[in-house]
Length: 282
Image (cartoon, rainbow, N blue to C red; front, side, top):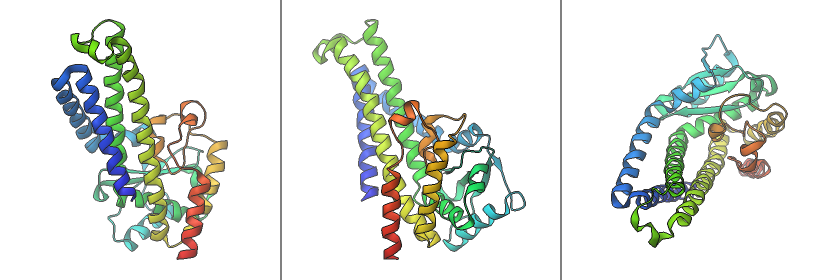
């Protein structure tokens, strides 16, 4: 069900992008919107992991650098017949972790120094299982595509907005509401794109929780870790970085401002409730 929902949401994003392109330049505008999306997706497919890791100054770590973390990831990958991802360490007191990469064979997992201090080994294993679940489910690629298309929609909407303000609309725009209609689309389209992107993110988090809990065979360890991380990240939010990458982390690392208004993650109480139910089933 989550896969079907995600596919439908991605399709909706793509349709919205084409409609905006059509509004801006007719059939040629729609074609240009598709070309822009293709170029952006190509770049994000090949380089998004490097961009995100460099954004947080993540350093690749080996078995002697973080022996407990490395051995946990190695054990989970071997047990679940997955390629061993690269392991990265982020020097931040804010406890968190994320996965990135275009496929299971080109994946990386990153953890902050803060998360290593507050979680025990079982809880850390639950968190890493959650991140490897994202890799197995190819959520890192899905979320990157969603973010890229949403970014293209916002870019085109800004073009429409400036065109409406300075009289640069096409002559037949009077049939579509003129400047008022253009401004209406320019405002609503990015909001719709953002809400769809958030819905995709939340849907994939639920799936990663379930898959990760089964991978580590201990749903309650992941539930305990989520509870700790939620409280700790509120007290010690992430400094630097970009709120547009919040969906990558296991819990939202940013608080206040824009990130506080629109959460990229489902309610923590519901995530924990589902893990408790899964624990009883297992």
